[in-house]
Image (tube, rainbow, N blue to C red; front, side, top):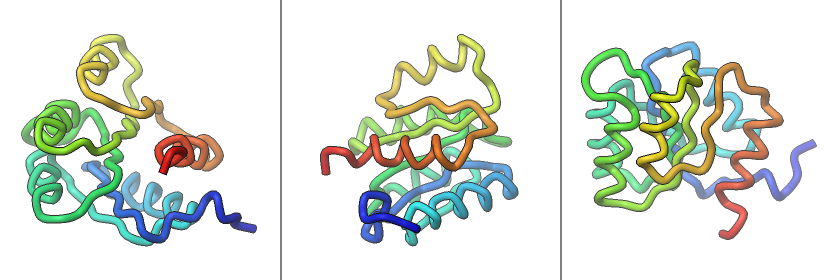
Length: 130
């Protein structure tokens, strides 16, 4: 069922999400796409630390995180140091959040709920040139 184009066994993905249920759902979708290496961060600060200590190829980020800085603030700080592609997945499609996200370099801005098909196409877009 899986084809070679949706297989990224060497990629490391950071999931920045404070909702455990959504994190587990994203991990399942990543596994279906052939990604085995995943790192979790529940806060923006934790994500910044993980990027410093791990080799991350992609960040999947929620915009609203329970505590501390927002997802977009964390991405801004991370992107000052490293050029890592970002996929935002959020429950909020309002203009204020989109404008904040535009200040970062992101691949896609997806509004929850997202389908497995849309997710796979977005992953393919991330690594189309690699």
